[in-house]
Image (cartoon, rainbow, N blue to C red; front, side):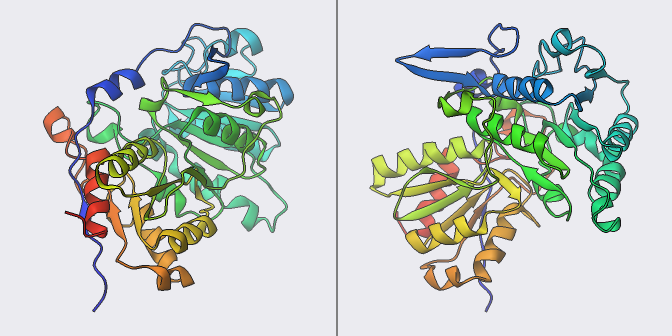
Length: 369
């Protein structure tokens, strides 16, 4: 009989977490850093802002285009101050026409420029799917490797708070299935800064999926990460070492997974390893196999729909590798609910994973009461 992989759906968000995540950015011309106990902290918003500013400084072919990115400083203030610094040639406001400005940007990339396309929400990128998938992703292959398309598509992805079904979908699995695209999913400020700079320099089209609720969150950053030359490889990161179970996740669910790991250790003596994927395509299969061989148990966590999701791909990769022989229990997937995101707060709270949901999944896979 085939193994069955249960899906856990219940989730209740912390109002304190949401309030913290929605704080406005610190006032600054380009980037704000804060020193506390000799450690530097930075918000995800400022990490993205500084990364773009440095790449605009570094390469005159780089420009930003999208709705409200210039005079309004961006819908989420991620492009704050860039128009004043780089001017209208490099920071371009557009009408509300994703199909139009994405096509313009892809055309510019095919002629050798390096656009950064901001979608106010990746839900709106559906209007531009033809340009992203059929033009940007496929042209290098169809031209026999002679025509590159160096472009970044970035913006908010997944659920926020009270924005309902048409503004809450997670597109990591959608874009992750397309050959020719790279798909990055930052969690921390260091992730955001290093991965975005790498994406802008990448000669391939990159889809860069940000989480709105992380913009105002502050993270410690290393001195290395503050360098204009700092980039990150498209590799997973071990956020927390563990020995009993591996929790593989990405973007905001890294936060919930770390909270769950603390609860598991404190209340049940369970040592959970938390893996931050950082990249969906290419997927760091080597890191996943390594952690499974270490802990012999695997839980995947995502906010996508349960069918055909990132967790499903991870399960398939493990099943098709020698890591399968190391499993002591079936893999458990924790996902979003199999419904369009509800608008009602009471229902929305049940639609996505949180720390208690992940704790229950781990206890179930380890047969802990």
